[in-house]
Image (tube, rainbow, N blue to C red; front, side):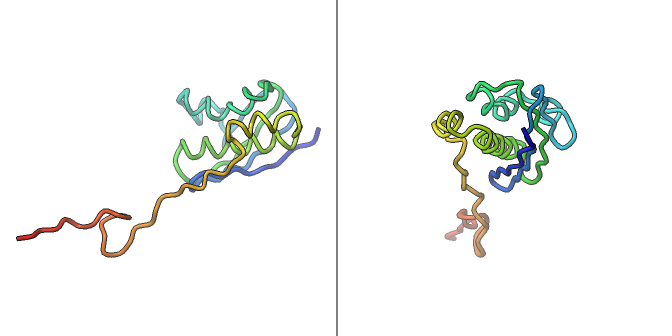
Length: 129
């Protein structure tokens, strides 16, 4: 099996991954997964596609992720891994990943600030007198 290269996005985070057959090692920006994403919730998010398809410990993943916060980065990595697994074996893995919504790009972004307002929708405090 050759190296599979895919991309995943969430909010302003962009994750580029390289997936190949191996022992299940995941490195994110040159660090171990548990070092880069210290909380259990973020590690579960990243490993969710492997658990759904039953392929834990059978692929090595090298991730380059940038932009956004840690949660957005974890979800971007999850989407990229899901896309790569579909390239490996689409007819077997795609239905499980599609059912959980891991192949759908979540397009929700932060709304931009408008002029004449304090934030995107919040206006300045109004004083009647």
